[in-house]
Amino acid sequence: MKKRTTIMTYDFDRVIDRRGSGDLKHEVLEERYGDAGLLPLWVADMDFETPPFITEALRKRLEHSLYGYTVMPQGYWETVAQWIASHHGWNVKTEWMTFVPGIVKGIGMAINVFVKPDEKVIIQPPVYHPFRLTPLGNRRQVVYNPLIECEGTYRMDFEQLKRVADDKCRMLILSNPHNPAGICWDRATLAELAEICHERGIIVISDEIHCDMALYDNRHIPFASVSEAAERCSITFGAPSKTFNIAGIVSSYAIVPDDSIRRRLYAWMEANELNEPTLFAPIATMAAFTQQGEEWRKEMLRYIEGNIDFVVEYCRRNIPQIKPWKPQASFLVWLDCRDLALGHEALNALFVKKARLALNDGEMFGKGGEGFMRLNVAAPRSVLAEALERLSKAIE
Image 1 (cartoon, rainbow, N blue to C red):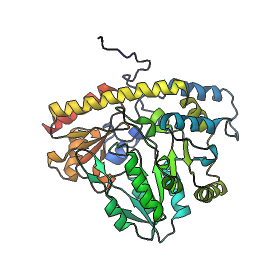
Image 2: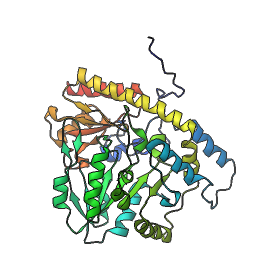
Image 3: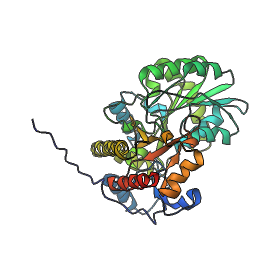
Image 4: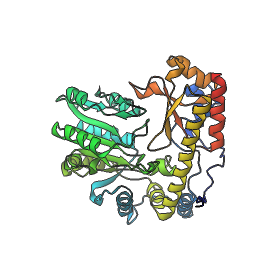
């Protein structure tokens, strides 16, 4: 039987020069790493060109040279709800949804609405660092429910969660799929988390920005969909920005099934005019959530899987001291560098000063991140090859 060859419509091998575009990935290298010439594989956007059908939709709107106040396009929320239903099996009502000006901003809003100054927010490190910084910046106490490492992945520690979730804990921030380890949490795990939080009156903020990037036949399960308890205690944040590389076009949304939670949050947002989208956000989203978008998404994910396999195999052959954890979702690879036996400063120096690479160091993600580095593999394979060769030589 002949092996089927997949024909790629889009060119993910093309190296795009982002200099001069004001991109964060390059422009802050001097400030954050002390070297503007590093090869950047850190912040979570892609080095692939934004899909042409999104660019074309934006260009068409730009041809009408008047950019005043606008309304949400007709059918916008139906488009988002249909995408979620077809991809994740969750039937979301349009009245549950609203625009939010970014997911981290949405977390900050929810903290200010639901968590009093003397109350607490629970996070599960190692995890995306704004989950810690946003509550702390809003002068709320952070409680830690660390994940338990097990054979190249993590699991939740529910016994420890029950111990630390006292009557001052009002919120838990969930990364689903998990960043940085790329875990698609299973239904049983999410249901148990929902049960614990609901019975204690804890709202779960589920950051599902990577939901459309499940890999290797894994499947994303929306937190709010797993049980009645989850539905009654959840605020879900999502966006097309990671999947379609449009992070600069703020296009996030919130989904809140529970009437009481929704009224409190959405009324506060409306009073502060924080629920009104920018001109281009709905245009880009509706262009992404189409059949063309689905075809692009599938091709992009196949390319990402190839990049992950490339990194895993390269390290196995050439840098056995570094063990990449194979993610179930997204383009972020959690590199276990502990066999190098380097402290925090020495590990950073190896990557930055010797290999001249900019990655996110594991300690910024909290307890359990020590000795890890987060690698963004959403780049042309030739760029990844150069990065790994630099790292191999630096270790030698």
